[in-house]
Image 1 (cartoon, rainbow, N blue to C red):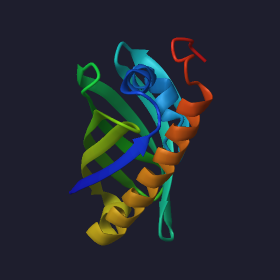
Image 2: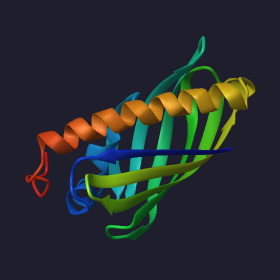
Image 3: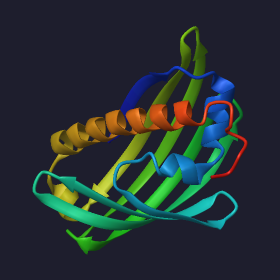
Length: 157
């Protein structure tokens, strides 16, 4: 299933891009991420907990940056399986696009998502609803992180 969300951050595209070049910092903006660690250049291991309805699961995921065009887009590929809670697996191909606009940067997230197991059994409607909620929470966390580090994005935290 494809999920798409767009939001605006009041920060120039150059600063948004610099932030996205630091995947560990971006991952901290994703709701449910408990741990992120670099395992190779452009490859990361994440522990993520999500709850959809009454079902929750903790996933161990591997995420790789598969393509990037500075200031235009970043593509990632993720695969994971549950390690706690509801049994399941997931796979996603994600594209983050950046468009400079007068008020800052428009960020568009597009995910092709496949979910198996108990979470997958919840159905398309429940997963899309949860994805929209996660995108909104991610956007708010990203805005806060960008604004708190505006002008200081070259520093590793």
